[in-house]
Each structure stands twice: as structure tokens, then as C-alpha cells.
Image 1: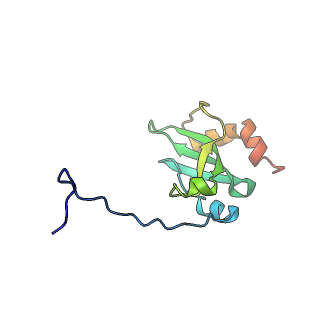
Image 2: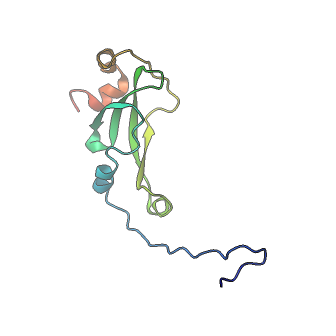
Image 3: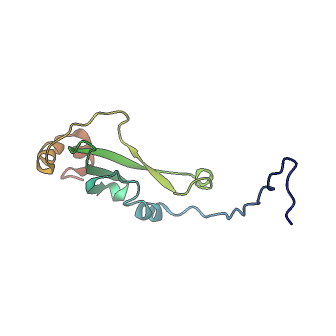
Length: 124
């Protein structure tokens, strides 16, 4: 028979914490490659060794849009409390992106975006 707490509750179970070593930057980049993609993702393009990406996806309304994201690496302390060693975050917070009816139309306009030119242009 198990012993119950003072209010009839089961005693708290001890959780074994296993320390994990923080992976290398290259390992994290490989692991996070296709993680945290939005629902309806159609295409993903990577730059800067896989640390920046442009995600083209279909919105809930059926339109096509995109976002630019940067991989933000966690430090050892943050990683000890997280399931993943990094997170994808938008390059620009709160920026509204246009919507298109087709991927072809989006691609035609995307090349004029400053973020696209900076990370995905011909010189990069």
C-alpha cells in the first residue's frame, strides 16, 4: 500500500535529470534544418550556412506569403531547460508581409525584398 500525503494526495515522484551536452553550432544547424516550419509550408530556402531561411507558405486564407527567419542558439543554461538547442525567430518582428495568389507571383516580388537581397542575392 502506498503512503499518501497529508491531504490524501500521492507523494511527488522524483524526476531523474540527465545532463545533456550542448551540441556544436553545426550539429544544431543540421538538427534544426526543417524544425518549426509553419503549417502549409511550400518551399524553404537557406542561407548563411543554414542559419537564415526564407519560408514560403500558404496562409489559412489560402494565399501565399513568406517570412525570413534566423536561427537563435540557446546557451548551455537555456538548453538545460529546453527540448531543442535553438529556435527559429523572425528577422523582423511584427512586419506585415504581402500575400499573393500564386508562388510564381511571390517569387517575382521576393527578389526585391531587402532581406532577400542581403541573404539570398547572387553575391551570397
